[in-house]
Image: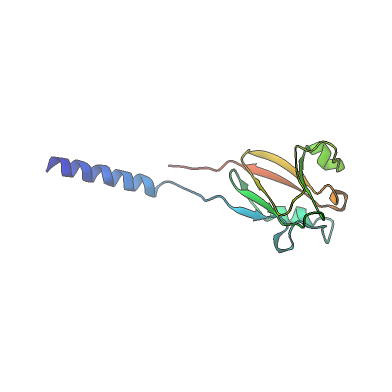
Length: 132
């Protein structure tokens, strides 16, 4: 009988601890919303879209675009500011493209074809907090 009480206490502690764990499931962010990753209809289109999103580590960005019509490139801040496409960190020319946000910090993405028209985003990835 003492073992039963000990097991019951252990199970109760585990259940209470589990109930206090704050878990969050990674999110998918469809860049540009329903319009997808296209030449922006207005200059600040993607800046406005980013303001409505919260990006956390392990989330994913989904760029919906037609292959041959657009590209996706991760670039440095300097390349982002000037729309320089010569040395991207990463480039994907096949749509749709998905980018996992595995690294906390600021990331810069552009379309190498329409960057100067405003087809670019800055993503500030925050750590995913798991608390007990």
